Length: 188
Image 1 (cartoon, rainbow, N blue to C red):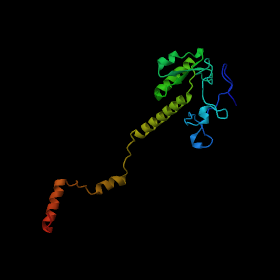
Image 2: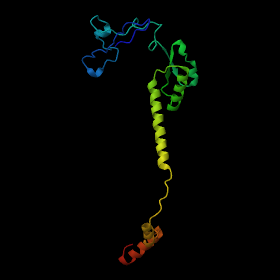
Image 3: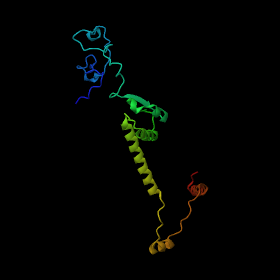
Image 4: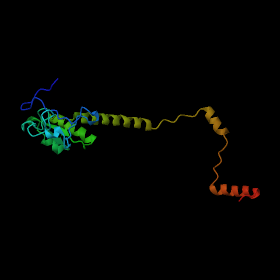
């Protein structure tokens, strides 16, 4: 289904394809200027695909519009104040905008009735914030002190019968022991 045509817009845009795009799929459909000295496409022969030239552009009245609306880049609250929803302007959130500020700006834009074009950025930030909140709650629940359980009679009995643990010998004690051991074996 085609999108309805905006006033002043062209019926269709020309598809500029790269030279030999049909022979080598790895080239893709992205436009590159043909640089060959004998290239018929560069020479502009009739039988070859068209190349971008002056005259293919959109009318100045609709140039740069997105669905008939003028996009305004928003990086902070001051930029959001500049957006005029009544003048057919929409906000585009900057890529460098953090998740916290994205959520705050989106809430303010909603209050003022301003549309945001890259709404996926907002929904991703909200999803991330929700996940972080859930993780913090789980961390709090697992870090909460657990009530101490009372020891049963058997455990108390076993404590009295266990042998007392001897402390680990220090390095000097170990060396002294080894020196005494090697004295009668003849090793140094």
